[in-house]
Image (tube, rainbow, N blue to C red; front, side):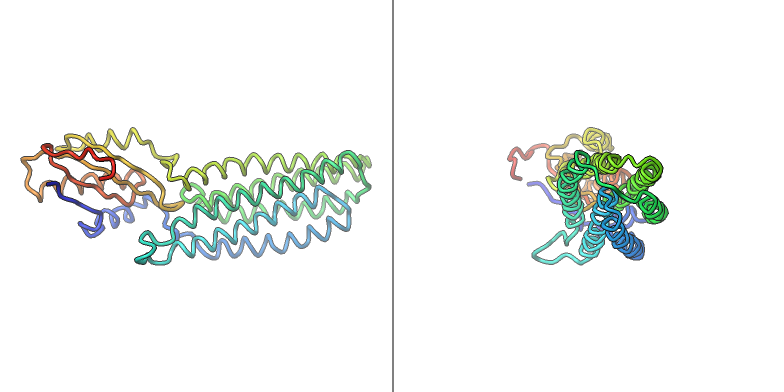
Length: 316
């Protein structure tokens, strides 16, 4: 018979260790105020942009407003999912609601792609049939947008490398600032030259810029939804690391996936030196978990097997 060692066997000791070394950002560590401030600032700016877009008849301004509205929705979804992720697990949801952070990230990307499609059609029509717009007002409103977007992006700078929703928000807002700069330039050129076709051209450029950033976010989110190995973790390196632990003789059934946009999990079966006592085998398991914590894997379930009776059944 083989014995089991699940992650609660050692009282989550490995988990406490990972906190001490700041190996990951838990959903609760991304400050609520960051998302709320970002939502309020960008929400107010969207209202101003929509009003100015209709007043000046600028498609570029409305395209930018659509993008900013997508960001407000993204921030709201991310905030909501991070709140859900902090809820405790239950008998029905044994992992809690951590996966909602991944789903929110995917929904954000899909919403932006739909927005791009709708505004893209309007932009092409505007390019083919230019209409007079007030370039000066467009440039001023877009200039305000640069300041708001840069300020909002900096709110997420601290967590952008650790949490997918924060990274998404940071990239969206930084892209918005660049987009607003493009609209400023277009507004100034239109004001002095009356090249009204530039409005449609700039709005298309805005949408292409959004598409590039959104596509990578969607691919990342889709990978995590399908329980793929997170991109910042090497399956081969983890395998070699575990096999390199003293007294580990072999391993199989290695699975690595993301529980949320901040936490990763692993399950595997290992065969350790059979001459060891049970307590010594537990120390080997603990040593593996200790090393995994340094490789961004916070939740590990490791099953011990004896070399005489290895598990060949894929379901076990």
